[in-house]
Image 1 (cartoon, rainbow, N blue to C red):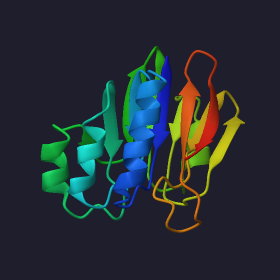
Image 2 (image 1 turned 90 degrees about the vertical axis):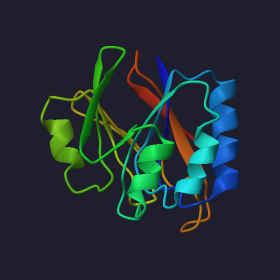
Image 3 (image 1 turned 180 degrees about the vertical axis):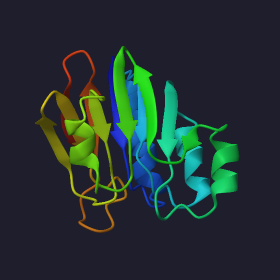
Image 4 (image 1 turned 120 degrees about the vertical axis):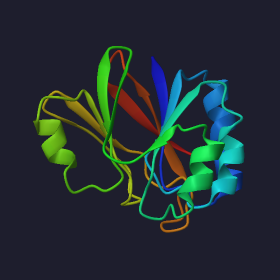
Length: 159
């Protein structure tokens, strides 16, 4: 299964729309958002996904009630654990315990955001992915990632 991974969209609706178009073109099986949507109106772009979606709240997501409503209860508090294609995945926003989660041996994929800096690496048997900032406000690069769960590999995509 191929999944899309994004984080730190921070209200950049045009970049979100571009990301959704690309993910739909690639026919990804699931999209995971690692937090900091910021405003609920940005979920309009995510409604255009042709696959399922899971997200977590970040430190800048203040209007959680409307985000929850618009996402149809698909945004969760961190850490959020799910299983896709037989792989155990944990999704965080902050980065402080990412290495410990990878070292625990409980997860195949550890996803995080918050730093706005891309990070794709293996640690032990786990793949760690921070897709960087889709919003592009902090570093001027709008990025996301696509991961192949069958090979536990990922690539960074610059929009």
